[in-house]
Image 1 (spheres, rainbow, N blue to C red):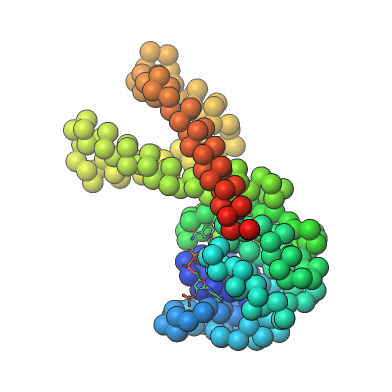
Image 2 (spheres, rainbow, N blue to C red; image 1 turned 180 degrees about the vertical axis):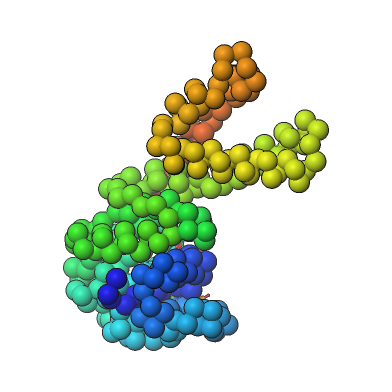
Length: 273
Ligand SMILES: NC(=O)c1ccc[n+]([C@@H]2O[C@H](COP(=O)([O-])OP(=O)(O)OC[C@H]3O[C@@H](n4cnc5c(N)ncnc54)[C@H](OP(=O)(O)O)[C@@H]3O)[C@@H](O)[C@H]2O)c1
């Protein structure tokens, strides 16, 4: 990527993206500018750790960078847009990761026809294994989508969706890591109650979920085929799967994603009033 990158917000998501784009050589540290609101220690840490530029001047970020990632909390978005409005111009691409903040909310408050892209990564950004969905705003173009795709590819997989699909994305991959952690807790507990030591049970549970996901990714086979292949009639896996289905495993996951997506819709309405 030739252009410079500005990152507004210096929290967990900002650092994950920063680490991703630098480690894959997409950008040089001297071409990255990070700005936050008041935490001096945090900026000092990012400068020392990654060698990036840090500043408290929005004017510097917008004059030095064409591509800007906004990684502040949703509640801080309206205030931030008010502060950056005067510095934003048609040359900029604004990429927001703020959950539940629509592109139209940003576009209307910028009061200009600016290319805005919305991205929904997940916490696995921190280990470069995010599942990120990207949606374009009213004025974004192929270039802005390809810039966002390139940036988020440095921290995992990227899919492009219509913005209206982002609630479903939030319910599935945004909240998904927590569902899997819950499953890991349950598997660990199950192992303990079946007689395993906690540490052994946890290691086996984590590696099993990792291995199954790796298998699904690398074999390219649909999960349903992989499951059938390892489920022999009358065998041990069949006994376990039967119990899970009798107890509503699939139905509860469908309902969990549906409810999380609904909550995302509600948050959008609350945040974008
Ligand atoms: N964490 C995730 O895995 C994840 C996943 C998907 C989406 N997101 C989205 O990513 C965004 C950031 O989340 P986070 O977990 O990284 O939050 P965070 O750790 O709380 O960081 C927020 C950052 O925003 C800065 N900030 C707030 N107002 C600002 C302003 N007016 N100008 C400049 N900087 C400002 C804060 O600076 P100070 O500390 O100086 O106040 C802080 O550095 C959220 O909108 C969230 O919805 C996060």
